[in-house]
Length: 92
Image 1 (cartoon, helix red, strand yellow):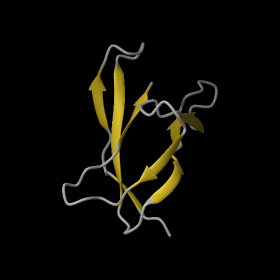
Image 2: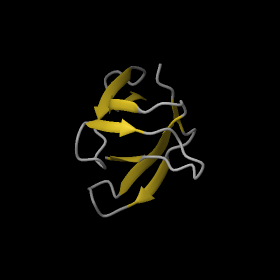
Image 3: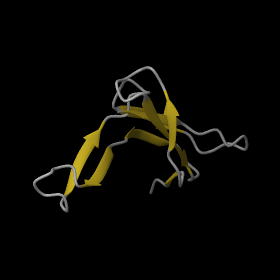
């Protein structure tokens, strides 16, 4: 069974790449012992109060990861002693 661990924090960086002026990055790693093949990372945000008519409702928004320019990651190798990890960006 694959074992993927995500960082506890998401970093917010200034950028000129989109209208919001920010992009968000997070790290993850293959914490298992074998390669993980053909992984798809989906970002699902749950946000409260997006609609003025129902401010207490939660909305679900799916956001693409735009660093990789494709949906599937072909292979994620186990973390090396150098602790190298893939980094994905969420561009709003």
